[in-house]
Length: 182
Image 1: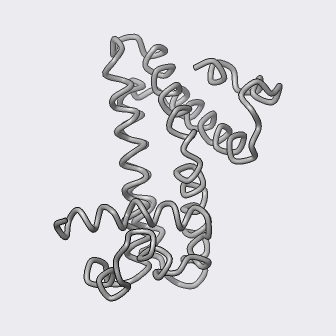
Image 2: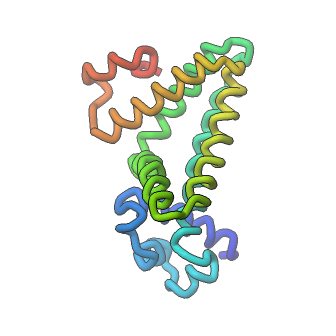
């Protein structure tokens, strides 16, 4: 396996480990074990745990962006509401991966903790990755700020409902019209 393939394995493993343990509660030893490499080898790929987390955060947002892009390409781009529904449906499929969803939530918490301890660059890098996702989705939704706001609001609500374990048929999904059946 090449170093780049190993880096990819580390990022994927890190998403799972950080999702389950958070930034502070996840050791690089746990990530190395999941990948099947030694800790010294892990540090040849990444300088420290912070960089592993940031690479995982960037990958997480890239994956969401890719899913939105693929969904948007399957429908007529001039039909903005169809594009929104396609992207929403794709997102619902994506968050079925509980580790991916929980890692997203860990990203938001980690930014706050890092910045509270003086690491402003940490938050800047995660916000930059999220902004790429936002800009891509905004473009697919025709630049309509109201629609993009509703779309991301519904997505965050979905994150909460899925993270809390509400089954799709539960009545709380009714507060998110159109997303439940997407």
